[in-house]
Image (cartoon, rainbow over all chains, first blue to last red):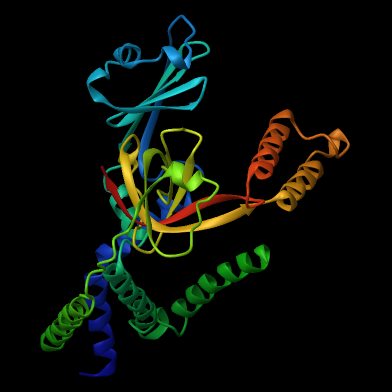
Length: 183
Length: 171
């Protein structure tokens, strides 16, 4: 098989084989890049309610905790509780928590749901084990191969002689400009 | 071409299976002592090296990265921050509210009078509007609390620990 044809065949097959990996890293890359703007792994919602009365840490027992939870219909979801400080009670429930400001009786419910697919792809992005490290290393090498082999897929004006050369140089200039801007 | 791919696939499988066999080292027989957070807070606690297991209530897992969490002891003031290691990619948010055991290595930061003096100097720098000499009341309380703890310590310093976790188990 001629080198040109072999390049084309390998580019095609590697491209097919690594579609899933490319999407995993592309999707999780965007999700994690914007960590400051949103939570890439969980959908977190907060609601607040007030009940009258002040409470002291000493008078909080399971009976009172159940009353707080009943307010939110979460009595059956109780997991555990603790006091982050003398004026604050945090009750853990399945899928979230209820915080109670003991000084004014204000309670807030925080629910946490994992983002479907995103949580899983982000988990993989964070490198969960040795085998993944190996496979993602292979993927990185394959990406480099796909990039280089892609340069030589087309011949003539659409290839590296004209169109390909201009776009390749343009794609190189942008990261270089950003590099100089940030340095 | 298909033959070439078949050879590559078989070679990859062989490498993985060989690697699996190689990783089957004899299990560590030495038992790791389970510590409570109260043990870590004791003045005479001394961490040398190696894995320890610490037990506590998981009160926070970072929802953004999942790479750090806090556990507290029976006394909520005894808190330990735990970071992920190569062996754990992220901590599950569902651990919050669970009593857990975490195995890993500890990292110690020693707080002594010199450290506190530096803290005070830094705080003074951060408060230029208050003529560089007047940290907030909350900061002062924290510093005074640390000073008292150092003064009461036989070692002349207090140890603040963080953990690099390699194994987490709900109990």
